[in-house]
Length: 594
Image (cartoon, rainbow, N blue to C red; front, side, top):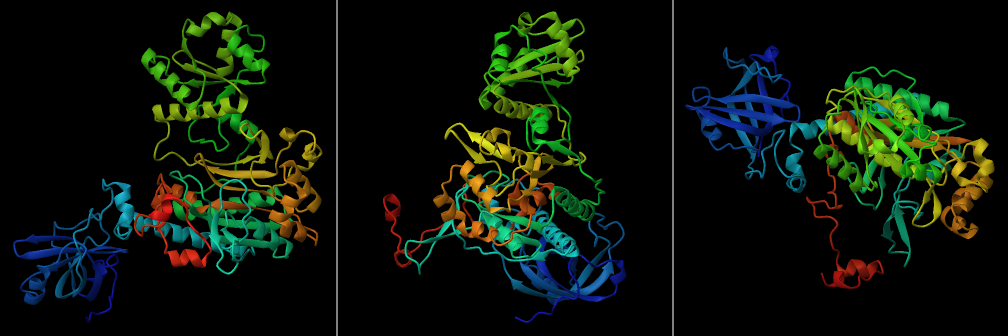
């Protein structure tokens, strides 16, 4: 069918255009028939314009407008006029004008949609994902994608200005499972062999440094076959960055410059740099998290010294076994009822704590069933250590160090929620967390794993402990944390093949295993690898925070559900027997019959 190309979008007409003949193309957003005069609000991604069908302007257009319904695709021709006094819509940029229509073309009809195409709708997310093509018509969703686009351009412009080169790395690579499971892709041409989708371009970007590219970046898809959460997807986007001949300070400076651009161009805020830095140990002991949310206070305090000579068996046992006693003040919560306190205790027990010690601070002193086990001096020292005031509630957990700190961190978050300490307009808090352990111990397998990845360099002063005490080795690693979410992480890499071999040995990999998985990288290191390091931004999470959303699914065009399903196109799906035969694959058991 014939229709004219639009002269303007549905978001740009103003009083300057009054008297102009225009053509608009878009969707019918709403329709109102007021005594023979029909009002249509037309929508495209740029905005909404009201168009009016009056019989005396065009009887034919008025007649044809009677069939229009929500989500019909239309093209109209007409003249811009000023809206009659008292009918202006101040919520729209186009709200002072409308268009008197003299011709309308229906480009396509639409079925009744399963939910309204408007923001703030109360509809189950699964329905939104099934009809994602409709969900994405909503202004809020389109704005989220426009925000992503803007952030892509900000990153590319900034990194290009610093001589970074965007290089694409393979999507089909060798499986090197470390941490999350790989997605495997069977090879048709090489029977019984598989590619893997990259969990990150880690080895490739290091090889690019060996190749002399000096400064690399890529906005890249990564894949991990792991259980999902609100801020995880099986496929996700990173801003991947690597640099040669640098140390941590150059990484910090480069990243802080990029974040200043994001702050200014997305939030219109000025970011003060240099950013604060917390060591991993301090972050855990003060906030119970390696990604602390500093938008609220509620610090934790280690109380081991207060109770180092305590006769209270619970405290005594923790200190003797190398554990920790961690306390926190909930200000103004000293009037919590016994029911509220039991509720808090249950909260901690469900997380895995043995129990919660609670103490009310009163004018006359501390009140708690635990007080009979504490001396007067210990009570005074406790009050001083936590800076407790009358009317406050003291909360204490004790046990194995890292588990207890994590539990205390979750209790800290819960108290912030109950006290409504995080406001929508809270000032964003950005910081570095540094000096991570290089290794973490797993109780189930009774072995050490790399806390970040096996290419992370130890601090030079800690290399001597690589063969004697792995718990003492700190990493030259760093995470960037915004509002309690890790938005970027990286490290200075190992660039020496001997040190890399020592790292693999510490992780329990034999020479043969290391060579099978990473031989190509080890080989490259023997041909003059420069010192190098980098960082990767979790772009989806970063966009989620800048958009003010709480799930990354709301800033991704076509996300998966929490179970990894794409409800719109029903992926993952079965394939034909012929396809499986070509790939030399046979499905056994129940699945074969489905």
